[in-house]
Amino acid sequence: MRNGLTVLEERAASPACASVCCSPDIYAAEVLNAASRVTILAGAGCAGAHEQLIDLAATLKAPVLHAFRGKEFVEYDNPYDVGMTGLIGFSSGYRAMEHCDALVMLGTDFPYRPYYPDGVPVIQVDVRGEQIGRRVPVQVPLVGTVRDTVDALLPLIKGKADSAHLDLMTAHYKRARSRLDKLADDRRNQSPLHPQYVAATIDRLAAADAIFTADVGTPCIWAARYLHMNGTRRLIGSFNHGSMANALPQAIGAQASQPGRQVVSLSGDGGLAMLLGELITLRQQHLPVKVVVFNNGALGFVELEMKAAGIVTYGTDLDNPDFAGIAKSAVLFGATVTKAHELEDALRAAFGHDGPALVDVRTVRHELALPPKLTFGQIKGFTLYATRTILSGGGEELVELTKANLRELAAE
Image 1 (cartoon, one colour):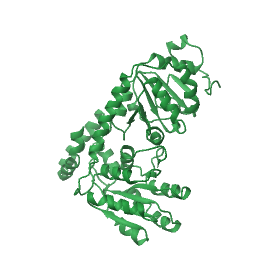
Image 2 (image 1 turned 90 degrees about the vertical axis):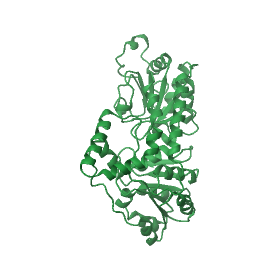
Image 3 (image 1 turned 180 degrees about the vertical axis):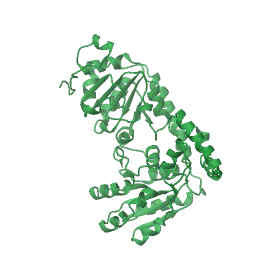
Image 4 (image 1 turned 90 degrees about the horizontal axis):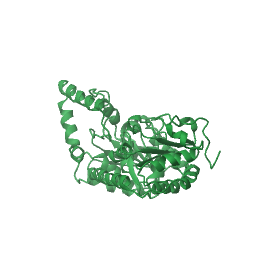
């Protein structure tokens, strides 16, 4: 161990190895000093290392994108932030990796190989050595915490004067962020509601130190794109395992361990229905969790996956009960929102209620959440889905899909 870094037992196979000594921190510094367009991909391993992350980005003039689990530790107070990439990310994060000539992975095992750049040196920092190189070939593996590793690297790195890459990517992020924000505009009489507007309103009204949980599926998309972290807020989900119906039980655990904080569960209708009895737990344990149901009457993310695979959607309809009525029968606060102008008052009432509360929000079913990179397979699959849907007599679904997504398609 030297300067907090584990010396490699075996050097990466690269011609550059011959010109440097066997110390991996010096080798990493040489790679970064030789690059002109460095990008940082940061994950949950950056917890407790925000200062080091910002110092490294400032030195390298590097845009910083984050994995979903890293959102709460990375995006706040970060002038180098360019958002997310991956299936639920957006274009600016993807472009920042696409156009780099060196990639630094800090505390992340980001799993989506198609979103990594090709043919560039990768430096990966992780306390779990067995995770390094699982997703992409890594030229310089560094085993250690992000805090200790960056502290050891910074004195070896020459500060960059050229900020062209950073400026281009942060400008791209501003444009992408503006397009996303436009999709969350309030349309007073809109019914059903666009989920972007619901998530943005939750973000605006929630406490500065709120703990958010998000169900696997489309609630994760809206949490990733519209919840803003500030260094005290938390975002919890089943980010590794992708277990359905996670939001409410995780909210119960968070609220029990943090009794003085506001806990908000972003629940899908399918997820809530799977563990509906946990509403009784809220009552029994007197836990003031605030449950917001994104009720689109379907297993929405499954439908997105089916469309991308060219499959006519089936078996995804949900015949939901009156969730607010069930909450009231359990002596919880319950409210139903069917129009946009009703949302803010309902959320304020729920958040201000001294006890558990549920707000059932009727959202658009066929809301598309386009990834930052559409593969040929996905385009082909969607074309097949549309053709097969028409041939099977489902033309109305395509009409609703088009009407629901005119704004997003125009923004893209």
